Image (tube, rainbow, N blue to C red; front, side, top):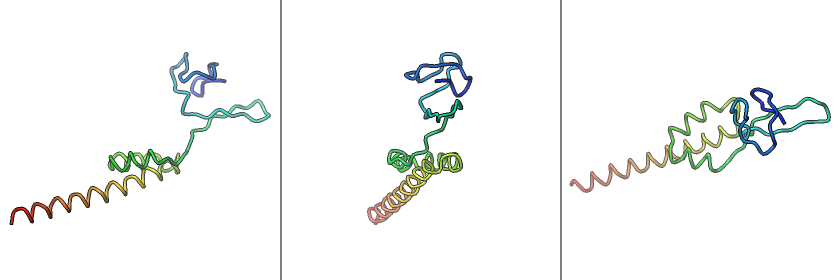
Length: 105
């Protein structure tokens, strides 16, 4: 197994390259019957990304905009989290305003 950044040989248990320090755990190693070695980023749709985007809608929007072309499934999770978070914050703001209008009367 080799580092995707510098090509230095690393063990399969390594999370970082001992030569350049590049992270190895974000890549899936695979090879076919040929000698060519490829590295591929994992593009998964995950509920964790949706929850993160819901709690921090601005982060969800930024991550969606950054990942929408490279990793569309992951970006879709962040987009859904952004939408949920934005709607929830809007509802909470409306209830907050209505509560204070009713309280001040």
